[in-house]
Image (cartoon, rainbow, N blue to C red):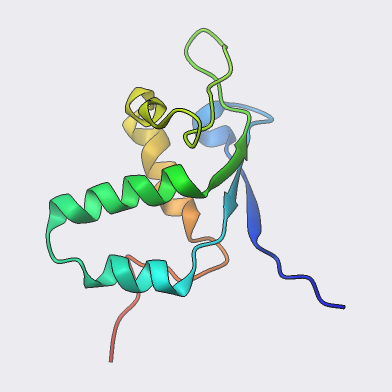
Length: 107
């Protein structure tokens, strides 16, 4: 019996150091369609942050003091404590194995 692969594990040592990782739940096509339909840059940013927050299943990320960070689903405010490089890494890797929302073209 087939089993749907609904998560992707991404090594994140480039932003969090050796042995770090994040596991994303895969984006659904309806989520991609919604993102592509938004015309306002502010709405796109917030939707992107929400997608990251809602799709991280597991990670072993730490803060500057080496203390474990809570999952964004448990503490959405943690996203504001990440560096820009870390958020860009998450955004760029959320679509691994799926549709690249930023680079897909219609027509």
